[in-house]
Amino acid sequence: MSRPIPVLQEPRPRLPAWFKVELCQGPDYQEIRRLTQELKLHTICEEARCPNVWECWNNRTATFLILGDVCTRRCHYCAVTTGRPLPLDEAEPERVAAAVKRLGLRHAVITSVNRDELPDGGARIFAETIRAIRRLSRACSRRSGPRGNTGGRSRCSRQRPDAGLPPSPGSWSVWAKQ
Image 1: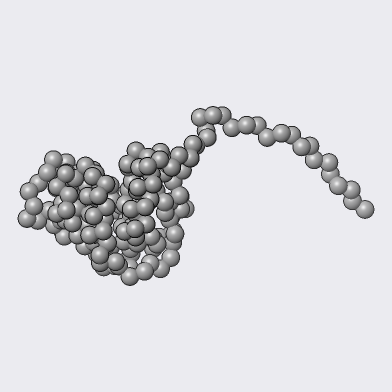
Image 2: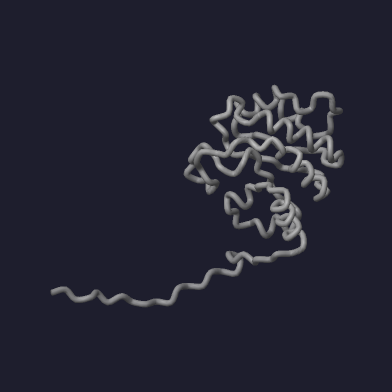
């Protein structure tokens, strides 16, 4: 017959103050959350469950996630949902541009899920999003686009998102040549 093994119940050590995150839903956080819900937009902040979302959104900083919220790759380090994505949302570029304009952003950061099932990997939607931002918000002189996937970057630059638009400092044309 076995007897239970005694377990010592030691109190758990308290976490240091610098380790704790203060959850603060200030007016800027609430505005970004309301706007992304209203316009049916995704942010990498929410989809990847970033622990700093409170801090960033309270400083009016968010990274828009385009091409949906389901990725076709399963990266072990990423919390974005993996699976078969929904069809492309052709109106998404205009909604992202409207959000950039309403938030009065001078710099918009845009990233995307991987869409391996698309022949261009989503490059057309990236380019249309950049064009829409330039058209609706002239104050937004800088945009960030696809960085990690060099194939996606070159496919996106072939879409010529700045065609017919005057160049702006630090704009698409700078990183498209990298």
